[in-house]
Every structure is written in C-alpha cells, then in structure tokens.
Length: 258
Image 1: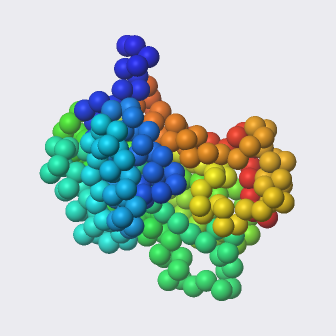
Image 2: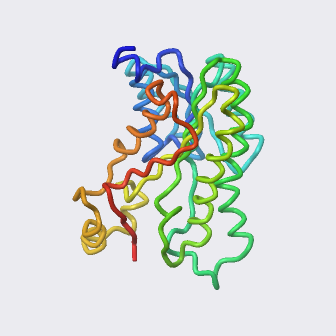
C-alpha cells in the first residue's frame, strides 16, 4: 500500500457536525482535500453553506444541512440527506458540542443545565453512531471520530458538567468499539488541548496564554489544522487497525484557564 493510498478518502462520504466554523470547518476542508465527499451539519446554516461552497469551488463535493444535534429529527435528516445525495456514509466526525468550561459553578447551574450538556456532548453522539453504523457496515468501510477534550482528564474548577460529559464520551467510544468492530466500523476520539478558535479567543489573554505555555513542551497553542490532522489519521485507511482509542493533541502538555 502506497503512502498516498493510506490517506486517500476518494469515494468516501463524511458527515461532520458543527462543521461551519473552527475545528469542524478545518476537518471538513481536510477530509475534502483527501478526496471525501462532505456533508456539513451545523446550527448556523449560512456558515455551513459557506464551507460547502468553498469545497465545491475547489473541485470537491459538499452538502450543507441545517442541524441542531439536540433534535432527533435533525439527526435523522442529516444522515438521510447524506445517503440520498452521496449514496452512503463512511465517516462520521462528531464535532458539535459545548459547555461552560470554567463557568459551571455547581451552586449556580441546575440539573436541567447538566442534562443539556450531556445531551449535547454524549447523547447526540450515541444517536448519530446508531444511525450511521448500518450504512457503514453495508458499505464495507466505517470510521467514527469524536471530538472530546483535555477537560475529560484534567481536574479544574467550574467544569463538572462539561468535563464529565467528555469523560463519558471517552469511555463510551472504548465500549462501542466492541459493538462496532464485528461490523468493520472503527470508533476513536481526538482530544484537543487549547486550540486557537473563536471560542478560545473570547477568554484568552496574554497572561493566560503565558501560563498555558509554561506547561506545554511544544511552546505554542494548537491550530485547527493540528486537530484536523488527527481526525484525518483516524478517518483514513492508515489507522485501519485502531479503534477505541483517545488521541490527545495538546503540544505534549496541559493548558488550563485557571
């Protein structure tokens, strides 16, 4: 097998949730550059279409689908549109997620908030896996990549809902690897460290960045391309005997806001 073929996704169909911006957008562009047809699900329909249009203008094939991962009918429609347009689903990148990292004071949030974070970061992922795996099994190729977080293993204040949901995502993937393996479907997680996105820019100051880099052997913060490269590894044939794993992309260290 040639080096090129190890990363070749020609003829593969990839769904990326939260693909309109940040890490999700770079994942869409990277997978498309490797040859995949891309289905972009995002709450911000205009942003998703902008990404899809850019891929099409570069010679690829892409479709945008408005999608709120908290709504089951949106998840069903996302998968149905992918199959209707491109014939199957081979790759799923569960990137959509969220939480109030560093702001989840246990005496100020409530059970409803906690439940919403788990629905967003865990339940929607499980449901999309359930929807796509039969198509992957039928096609003969399947790779699911979930975006988790360093928060899943770090210990910090104000992170109880977000961090525990991402920890659940890690363990869920490790267990689903056993369920999906006999169908020739792999499932892995990518855990970003502090990555330069709009979300990080809203809290990042020179002082916070300096403190983050003090505990980062590779003395820079992450870029979206760093995370997309790890996603490509798990999506592509090069990782065909890898499943149930978590790859932390963090410059070798730990970056926290406290």
